[in-house]
Image (tube, rainbow, N blue to C red; front, side, top):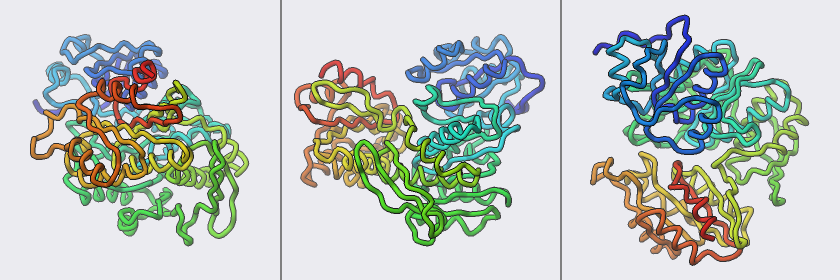
Length: 473
């Protein structure tokens, strides 16, 4: 059926969200409810924290996709990007002639229209960078709005609808919807933007690195002359994208000629103390509970934005020091028998490497046990097969799970966890393969010892391994 109703009608009173348990979709659902709309949602993959998050806010979520879920005729249907044209609710939506839109379209209409948008993009670091920025703006009294891909501990939420002039939002390069295959971030029109990194990812969407670079290049080319882009100076892929642009460019990182750069760094557990230079002058010395150089660079980008918004260095410093972090980003889940269990969202080889390096730098005297579930569309494919071994180089013991849902990947494209374990063993590391989560828990319950730090990395729920392991320990 021809797509003739891809628009937002007016006025809107009732909204239904298909695939509402996605992080951004869930935040949007809550915002719409806060704005006074009647909101319903549906999803087939309901798991914490988003399922609990929506329930706490009184948003009814119907389990499974069914045409009857929208038979009541909502004024608007918001279609999540994982939803296909064959979804029964989509078919019913079209049959009824309902108006529909994508998540970014709804954000633009109902949230961003009256705000100055600050967009955080890049292959890595979006959630942490966005979260630090939202916290600094909040601490500075700017009452920001934000939609972020993780639950901020300081707010107990991944969204806030604030009264201030700024909206902080993650800019995802993933496609928008089945009827709009362009990246989500192309929908936004930011006053300021951050570009943290450009690497190959999302193998189900992009064919190769060139396609990824083209997507980011289109974003940069579309930034208005009055916009400012903060670009990381240590990424050659970014460097090649900065020539065709009309916006103002500021660079941040460790380059001596960059507008903003890191100075001396010292780990004084539980703090990391670091200097920030603006041009060739010291801007301030700050401390943060965040671990790792990659997080210092995230904080550096945010510092540059905060300065452009006339937030004093002292306020920035106090906010960096008090930042509570993001759930599933180096999050301590518990300790039993002096064994610590940490949770992290890392899944791309670079993120795995940097997370392990960050944790090892602070807990150098402890045995680091890295537990990894290759779960994303990219990590379940063999494109990173030869790259992953080096990512685990600083781990003392490595546990690799069989990728879930391998049947959805063509056999010739599948990632092999067994091969990764063999490659790690050839490098002289202790590594083990496990067919399922239960086997990992059984193994660690027997072999973990006091002083161990067990770092669990996955972009999914990993069968609630964290709580189950702590119970067994």
